[in-house]
Image (cartoon, rainbow, N blue to C red; front, side, top):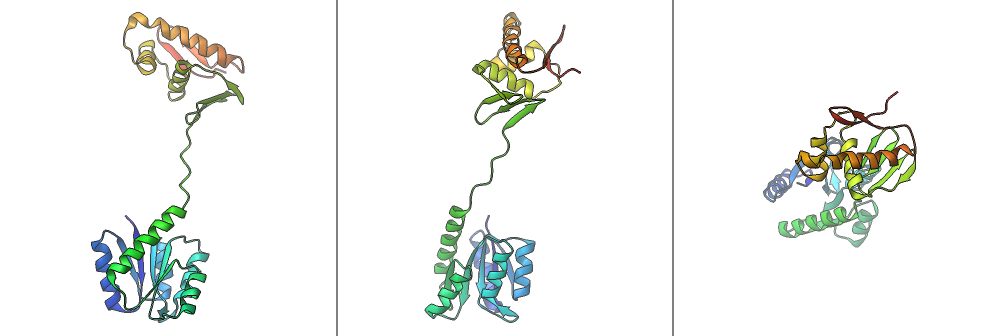
Amino acid sequence: MNRILVVDDQPNILDLLDTVLRFHGFTVDTAATAARAIAAAAEHPPDLVLLDVMLPDGDGMAVCRRLRETGLDAGIIFLTARDADADQVSGLAFGGDDYVTKPFDVEVLLARVRAVLRRVRAATPPPAPPSTTLRYADVELDEATLRVTRAGEPLSLSPTELRLLRYFLINPGLVLSRSQILAAVWEMDSAAVSNVVDTYVGYLRRKLDRHGPPLIVTRRGWGYALQLES
């Protein structure tokens, strides 16, 4: 849900826009002065600001500049009775995204609001994806690229070995029984084929041990654990 900050010193306009925008699904904050607008934007950063140019304690364009200086990248639409081309150019130069003159048609204003929000979203880089790297000691598995390294050296693993290593990495230090490993890696529950676990643990262990001390330890009668023993 987009948050919109409406800044205007005319109560009837504040009430009108507050009602209309809430009706159309927006979260709305209001301010009647430049000082309150700056404080409100800091308290609840908006996605878009509807900003009157003439305020009792300052100029809306100066407010726009101040908001940009604080790092606010929200869309800003100026609302003003001034309709000269020079005023519109000034508004855009101060960091505004659009300019709507009073009196305005509410449906037209809503269309401009949605258009600016679309532009702002399109211009905003996506957030960095969360880390997809699993680590234990000096072993790393990047789940996005399936790249595995130990002590910085790349390891070439088969798909089954990759799944097995991942299961160990998400359960570091825990003793995992053969039946647990079989169910998680092979999605099987037959004890009759549990020797496949021993075989693949052997394959994985040999590849890991080429680049450092043993990491997969055997707990006789119980199973295996990813554990760096001192």
